[in-house]
Image (tube, rainbow, N blue to C red; front, side):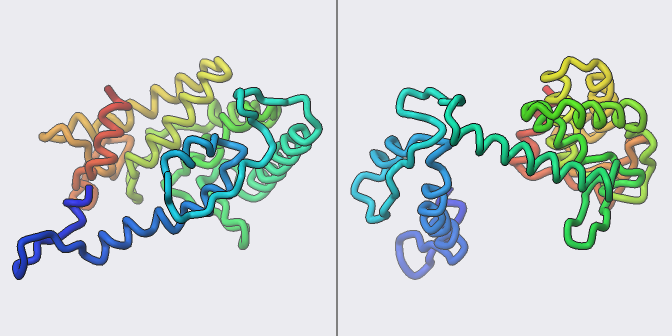
Length: 246
């Protein structure tokens, strides 16, 4: 990775790190204390301490919390229950706000309460992306509302142009959201929607002469790759899509 960020110095026999390379190396180190502060309840910091060895970074001691050294989650503790209730309440409140101001839209802008859609008509990206979270948090009524909306209104083949359909983003959020929601709930309607959406995205892969997926489609209905969307993906999206559509 460093070789890609470095540039050869013609004046000396060595490698000189350019500014971008220095920044990309320094940024994770600068963010590490923040990450370590936020992570105690999610990961073990003991292994991180050993990996850093004599690093000058000062990491806080792991706070008592959700996961103890044996990996046991004390879900019966009052502290855990209170945190869990706060997360559920915040999610429920956010979903109600989305339902009131932007139901079926791709995004809700929280300050203006305006909607923003990736496509026309909208795919309902936020709604679909949130379904697995609603299920895991036990918000079954909200999940059922979202599933009913997908079953009644989700039709990617209505999208016949006008906006760029980003294949990578819609795969991870819409297709992934539908598959995750089906895996958790067993609702066959969500599997049907996932299969329909995958079929709509498939030309981004099948129409590529190189096999590297196109970045986007101009029409999901017609499977059109226009000059504006005809560029292929970068290496990270391409690798992801090739695995997901394998």
